[in-house]
Structures are given as C-alpha cells and as structure tokens.
Amino acid sequence: SSGINAEWPLRPGKEFIEVNKKNDALDTLHEVLRMRRHRQYQHDLHEPIITLYLSLCVELKKGHAAKEGLYQYKILTQNTDINSLEKVIRRFVHTAENRAEEASKEAKSSKGDMANVDDLDMLYTPESLMLATVSGEDDQDRADRTVLTPWVKFLWEVYRHVLDILKNNNKVEKLYQDMAQLAFTFCIKYERKTEFRKLSDSVRNHLNLIIKHSHQTNSINLNDPVSLQLHLDTRLYQLDCAIKISLWQEAIKTINDIHSLMQLSKKKPKPQALANYYKKQALVFSKANNRLFEACALMKHYQLVFDQKKTATIQEKQMLASGVLMATLAIPLPASMSENEKYLDLQNSTKDKNMTLASYLDLQH
Image (cartoon, rainbow, N blue to C red):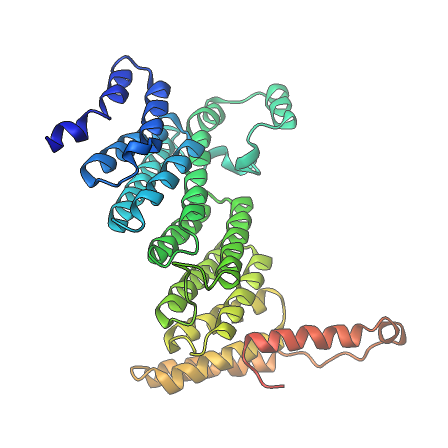
C-alpha cells in the first residue's frame, strides 16, 4: 500500500534515532533523498523524509547538511509541488529561530556577549581563545559562549543557505524576499553588523544574477511590477535596518541599489513606497551632514505627500513644509576652493559626487 511505501524509507533513520545515533540517521536519510528510485516525487514519501531530515539538521546544528537536503528537495519539487518546498523551508527556518530564542532565554540574554563576536563565520580565532584564557569569563560569558552563540551562528547559516537555494527563481520569489527580510531582522535583533554587511552583499549579488541570467527558465522578470515591488519592499526594509543598526555606508549602498532597481523598471514604484524612500534618504543625508541633499530629499517627500496623499491633513502638510524650510535654511554657503584643491581636481570630484546623489533623488541637472 502507499502507506507502507511511504514508511519504509523512514524506518532506518528512525531506528538510528531510537539508539541515539542521530548522525547516522542523518546520513541514511540523505542517501534516501539521493536514491535514483526516489527521483520521481511523491508527496507522501518525500515530505516526511525531508521534514525528519531537517529536524535532525536543526538538532545537530548541521547547516551545510540542511542546504544539501533542501537542494535535493528543490530539484524534486520545483516543477511538481512548489507549495511543499515553501512549507518545508518556512517550518525549517521557524524551528531554527525558535531554538535560537530558547537559547537566548536559557542564557538570560538576547544579545549577551555576542557583541564580542565580530564574525559568526569565524567564531573561535586563536586571538579570541587566548583572550578568554587570559581574561577569564564569568557565568554569563560562559552561558553566551556555550549556549547562545552556537545557535545564533546556526541560525545565520540557515538564512544564508536558504537564500542561496531560493535565488533567481520566479516560483519562490515571495518566499525569497520574506527570508531576506527575516535575515535582516536577525541582524537587528542580535546586533550583527558583520553579518548585515555580508547579507547585503549576498542579496546584491543575487540581484546581479537576475539581471545577468534574465532569459533562463524560471528567472525573475524585473519588468514585472509585482516582482519589482517585492524587491523594492525588501530594499526599503534593508535601508530601514541599516539606519537602525547605524551602518551609514551600507545605507548609502542600499540607496544606490534602490535607485538601480528603479532605473531597470519602466514604471515608478508606488507613491507610498517612494515617499518612504525619500524620507529615509533625508535621514541618511542628515547623518552625513549633507544639508543640501537632506533638504532636497525632504522636498521630494513633501511633494509626494502633497500630491498623492488625499488623507493628509493641513497640519501634516504644514509640518512637512516647515521641515523643508528649516532644512533649506541650514544649507551652508559653498566655500571657495584653494588653489591646491583646484589643482587636485577636488572641484570635479565634488561635482561628480553631487551628480550621483542628485540622480538618487531623480533631480534634473
């Protein structure tokens, strides 16, 4: 019967689990996923296998093994049962997030000593081990190192591997964007600046792949307004997170990414998204002490609210107008350049920079 057929591939794995040989169970289930006789997808057969397999990966903190299993499952399901792939991935990520949350509670800290871990991909360097030996560690430090940090590292691996598996596939593009936003949320929650930079680079590289391989089967079409909006929503969230974590260079890079996406599209994003974008730009320019472009961004935001937001009150419009006026009055007069600065061509350099910033605000020059 189909019940017996669905059960027997799981049996060896379950037997290993019963005698606490979980690594052997993981290897056995991985082989089952790769078997030629199981290359034709059967929901009742394959979904229980991958579910058990991924639960073991979480328990053993085996990020790379999880990626290999999910890759095999993607091959099986992407043309037959994409909903199963999405369900399996969402459950897997949710389980890993819960384990990290439980570890936070056990260590009695959401961040703990995580600030001392510069890079989760290089947890134990010779310098860090020597420092721990020399300086000693209290109970909280030890709890963070042994309980919290390994789970946070694993969760980071989960996000990274899942995004790599889902990249440039129009069948799972909403899932990809959801996972990217969860990964940025993770960086904020655990104050992971290094991982935020790596994540930003990854999604930027994935976007380049979309542009480079736009004619491949299942590739994402950025001329589709729905696809473009998904990307813009994630980039705007990324920009918001970069501001929250005070990574201003990453914020500028993200603004450049958003501008590039807008240039690729034949249609402008929704006015609400555009207004949000200009408002965030104004904050970034403010932090950079660039009063001219802060005022320009505030003006663009005001124009969109005034023209498009039918529910905007007179008080709201007055407040925004006052903000534009104050920002404009704060613009310093341009300083004259010395002969040395002119010789070094700093004038043209400043002009080129301003032209780039002006393009971010869609200003004519």
